[in-house]
Image (cartoon, rainbow, N blue to C red; front, side, top):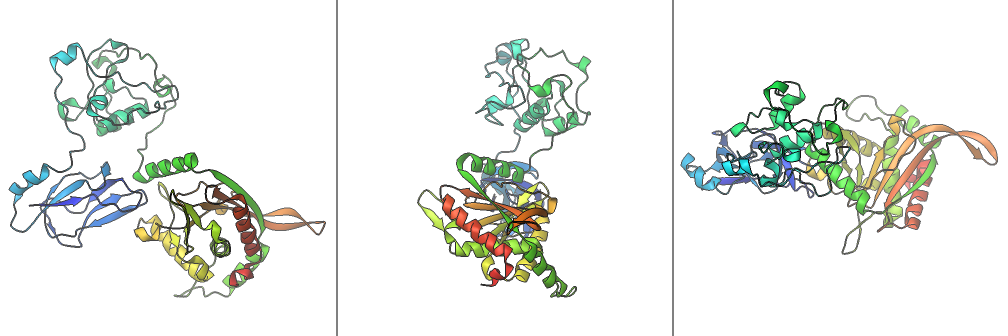
Length: 452
């Protein structure tokens, strides 16, 4: 019996993913450990290795397919002695093709279509709450022109229909290249580039819609549609849930960092410039260390909410936000409070570089207990970050800049950095958050306290 290759769960939050590419083709020999495919998860693009040996008999899910559910069959591997005749029975339980051809329309349906009317988006282009997005075959493949002037059906894949709706393209003006003239993604892409839309004279004019989306109004702003990556979708989903479900509150302190900058300059001046032991500390390295030490001194802030109870973490694992193409990822400095500044700096540079190349291992970006987001290098003075569930806190770090301050009743100038803690009020109360920021400020302003 052929062996089914299943869509793996490559992170705890992954429920579906995009099959980015196949590294083997049908008929190729497969050995244990060979890379079969690349999967785009909610965090990164990762390689999937074979655990069985044989021949790749059939690819069930083509490269580029989005929304592949975890544990859905994606390929079949023939064992030694099996041939393609064994694939038919195994494929019956496999994944359905991404875009099955619709049945030809029946004459009766042409006269009196029974499909539900097409849902019309409100002004502004937003879909009404609960609207289908690539739903059932009946709702997604059938469209009845507004006003009922024409009883014909427009066959289009859910993805093509969604793309056309977002781009404000009338599907009746697109010639489909799929089975039975069905409109698929490439047809919408062609229309967006000006190559696929049928001439106006070639089709009867469509009746005016009852309530047209803003994007379809004549003179709408020209634009191009950039399909969402899996990462972008998950970022949108999780952060929306965070703001809706997690009761945020924010605490801001202004930290004088002149002593920190002097210590950094002194340490870097004595550091080897080349070779294996070379390093150059950044302000962010000090922030990571100070935030970790403060968590050890205020352990109640190193916590997460669960329905069963509060999770108080026994290790301090700092998730640090790193921008990557199409989104962001949070590689982790494990046991950060126990590590020196040079080790933190070295690890952070390595993790950030591999994050931008999509080469992080799952354990290197999953399971942190506290997050840091630093936009100071972009000149941002102050901002409030969204909590990254299930963590209970995230620290937003702004730019250090010279400001006028009052010391001992006299005006003075100091380099000041604003830092804001976002707290989940279900697990971190105001006093706990305030104590944490008080300790963090004292460490940042007196870097020698990191050694205590």
